[in-house]
Length: 122
Length: 106
Image (cartoon, rainbow over all chains, first blue to last red; front, side, top):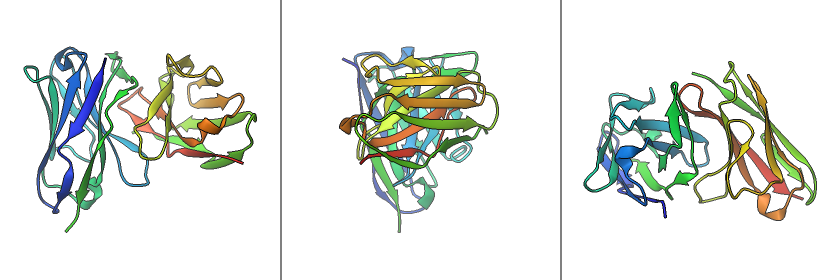
């Protein structure tokens, strides 16, 4: 059974750092396209970061230069290192597996985790 | 960035009613559109991808149509369990989502 479980969220001061983890089971993260999507409280969905099967990484402009996506094939985990956090980064962060990517378009799948809440506040 | 504009932002309908949600893209996204259902406190669930392909396990009362810049999600006979917020999404260039449509049951 495919499962994604996020962890690592919490309360952090502005300017601080936090690392989110996504534990995958039922498939290998290194063979898939994995991403992070976030949702601010009461707001819509925003794509954050994506890592291709080959290891290429992509970021939304809002987090570029501050967030880093990575993976560990030995642990079958995906990570999101978040630095220089801002109040507007407050959100539930979801880990998701894309169906596949083709010609620059990545087709979504229904495999998402339950999310982990990050609150940036003083 | 491609913007996705949904309408209406909220709607209220009776059980058994036919419901249509519209999404307009700021530029053509061919058929690279998905529709999601989200209930409070839960992750979104994928209903439709590639504009009209039903995700396995999704009830057949849900359908999607459109291409280019205009897309619709239709619920043919609204059920109490369909009370949720629905989002459209384009994946032609990165991913962007509509602002959501809250569907309430009268």
